[in-house]
Image (cartoon, rainbow, N blue to C red; front, side, top):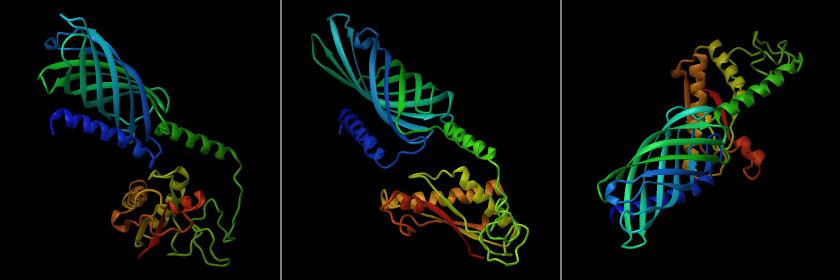
Length: 345
């Protein structure tokens, strides 16, 4: 397969992958992107063409707050030094890497890609050229979904061994994405509203420890408990649920993890196994990997935020094989996207 055939096949497969992948994941910092922009093309003298602006439109996919790809189509007309006008079309595939996580403000990024440039002169033969490009840019994140990007690139022709340059600017809209800053701000707002509400002094299991301080709610009435509401060496029921296709731990789940951290600090000889699970949507192998990520996320939280010795915590993923509710309903799938803990020593 020659360079041109490979480039055309790669672009086609990438565009197909963008839309097929989007069926399976729509979570924070993920989503299909659309872009509208323009480029200034400084063409090398060997083409004998004037430099020119081009209009561009594209579609892509943002995989996370660092990495994204986009397929770009552009067309423009410029003057040939000797034979009138020349129409040019470009089919380009770009990969972007953000140098800092996606959130509000100005963010630098690296970009690299390749394109197929087609020249159609008023007089003379058509000419195709496969090119590679690389450059740096800066992105202004205007909202969690909308950004303005601009970059400058060096462009290398693989067919004619010439180097050109290009300057691009584009607006990007991401469908279904939410920036970490926006999500955290929403959580803080919810927490602030809850904080304003009066806290009821409730002791549901009547063990003498208020629910707000009870690390072991639901103990048998009359059982001897310590100052945390737990029967000595009794395990805590850790249950953390997740959004679809996500291993992000919510602020509500953090409070439960804090209880487990306090439990393990109080009993330094206890060891636990963290077990991750998913619902049945998506491929089985993908779900197995996702369940392991969820278990690891809880394990790392206990180690990093609560100072628990990593040798005391085992993490394992069970994928979709052990549901606790029906996967036929949204509520059931939510219950199945979970992490639980079991005391093993």
